[in-house]
Image (cartoon, rainbow, N blue to C red; front, side):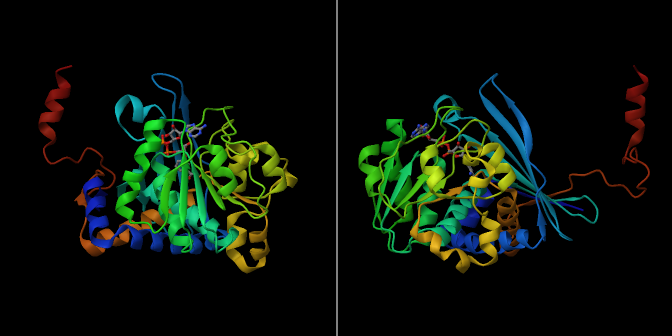
Length: 358
Ligand SMILES: NC(=O)c1ccc[n+]([C@@H]2O[C@H](COP(=O)([O-])OP(=O)(O)OC[C@H]3O[C@@H](n4cnc5c(N)ncnc54)[C@H](O)[C@@H]3O)[C@@H](O)[C@H]2O)c1
């Protein structure tokens, strides 16, 4: 009855052993399977919920559940605090994921999910890109150069081997200028260059918006593309009132949400009437070839971040942890010989004596 704790040092050892490209490729493959499993009813995701607040910082802590039928339950807890990088030198997204045994409720594993969230968000965009974008796309535009931009660039480079150039823009100049150094260890084939929006937009074949734009602060770009087959991964719209893509573009594009109900509440789909929203990713996963003609049109992946992705990422990491003997096993839950006696401690006498002094 122990719990496997996978901390950031274990994640580092995992990356050193397996490699970022292998991890990202494997997660892309796993997500395609997981999306299809959702479609066939093998995975369910109750609505996520959370606490949002304005003090002491503007922020949010939310919980995202997913269950594999007959398998484990995964709950990711994620914090969103956009002032973290500038005020505390911490990531905007801080997260942990837990996995529960549905035979007993026992906590099987608890893992860092700051890395996993970035990895799976990149992987989800790669899946959408591989199904909805032109395969010979050459220019990726990144709007927002923070943590998610790194894994967007990584994942999309793996999905589109013909990618030649990454143009990037951020309203914060220091974040913008630091992006090449953060991408350098990935040794991407595509060159990366800062660009103003009016240079980036007409050239981009693929666009990823991953900004911390304020509620009601969007869109993060205006029109500026005449391309008939642009694909957008809209990653930063994941909260009521927070959107990144201009309404007119959404209206003429095929908008494919990750999880439709969540996207209507928190994603770009907030801006659309139900009949303007296209098929979701799970439907496409059932038979991607049926939707291949979308590649010739403008498409938007409305990525709000889906618990199915967290379950897939957590199962991948738990598997590697077993294989590579990563993590620390702790006996976290109180489990006694007599399951009816929660007071069955090794040495109850001092506790009782302590209590009697009140
Ligand atoms: N869809 C998902 O699954 C998913 C997962 C993780 C994060 N997110 C969202 O993605 C967004 C980015 O997350 P992050 O971890 O990269 O945050 P981050 O703070 O590391 O980076 C966000 C960047 O956006 C920039 N920015 C803000 N407004 C902008 C604008 N109008 N134009 C251009 N740049 C702008 C900021 O300067 C900052 O550098 C957040 O909104 C987060 O909630 C979504």
